[in-house]
Amino acid sequence: MREERNIFRNIDWITVGICFALMFIGWISIYAAVYDEEHHSIFDLSQRYGKQLLWITLAVVLALFVMLTDPKFFNAFALPIYLATILLLIMVLLFGTTISGSKSWFQIGDFRLQPAEFAKFSTALALASLLGRIDTSLEQTKTRILAFSIIALPALLILLQYDTGSAIVFGAFMLVLYREGLPGWPLLLAMAAGVLFLITLYTSQTAVLIGLIALFAISLFFVRRDLQNILTLLGILAAAVLFVLSVEFVFDNVLEPHQRTRINVLIGLEEDLRGAGYNVHQSKIAIGSGGFFGKGFLQGTQTKFNFVPEQSTDFIFCTVGEEWGFVGSLVLIGLYLALFIRLIEMAERQRSVFARVYGYAVLGIVFFHFMVNIGMTIGLMPVIGIPLPFVSYGGSSLWAFTLMLFVFIKQDANRLNLL
Image (cartoon, rainbow, N blue to C red):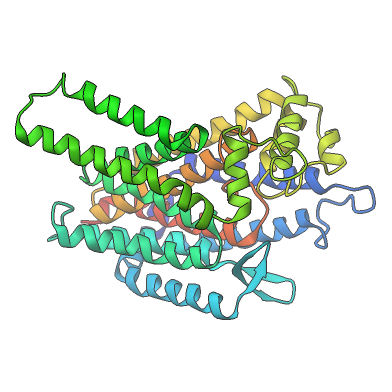
């Protein structure tokens, strides 16, 4: 019994406090987003804010359960948990319910469960278990193939559910691989491909091809002009040219119509204030109208008259911006930044590779959600429909984030006992 008390004493209470502060902000923001005078009790279980309070209560129970579990359990059973999640992703493709165009939910009555949210947790466990083995290194080709396969399998299954946003989140695991020794060029290559894709859409294939050829010619003046360097540059040029030539085909034949519209709105080729650009336009109006101190709790006009769709889920940040203004938004962002700093500090002080890798996986997933969700509410990111961690309405996402975070808190509390 004394050992358990010591374990609870070693908990990083700052991280726990930040987590519950975000949950509380989310709860009152959901209340503000869907408030009406007929259902004014914040504990009304028939309304979203009442249900969110129930989800929060169950999340606390889940956190306590995790803290009472042997920390070695999560490493030992990482693969079975991962395989069980893969099975759930396959089952939801066969028997799931389609909601908002995505066949990614199990629904029993009013209860819904989204396996994709928990797949992020299980993938983090499986990746940490793989890289935590004594004889494993990312310098080995076999390890890289296994690591990318662990990440790609659930992402592809989620993509088949037409849940592109959740599938893209798995790109956050690249941060983990980079921290564990993967060269930086895959990250740079992915970023360059994204930028080149958008530039090609914004301008034209001809202009981009001319620019690439000019860049190749300029590069010849800054490198030693031997056969190897010239062939390397020609190879890069050929790959870039083929990529640019494929952009229009991918854009027209691979992406869904609503995805094409959102990208066009993002880069300014379309305005569509009554269609794909409506949510973002109204969200920016709501955030901007909050001013410095905000309009006050339950006083947001954009919120009260439901101008912004999905305001309790994907666009919850605009409720904070309108009612609490720049100051409230800064407090919320500050809490997330404090959480990220704590996660980095906790990850770096781990004694086991498993715990460190898992910690960076949690950091990457939460940061990606934070960056994209807030970015899309202010028009800096395309709208891909992913929640703001611990704040947006929804039981699946809240439980998944709670599970991810508290498993790491448990690992950190026992770091002196783990080899």
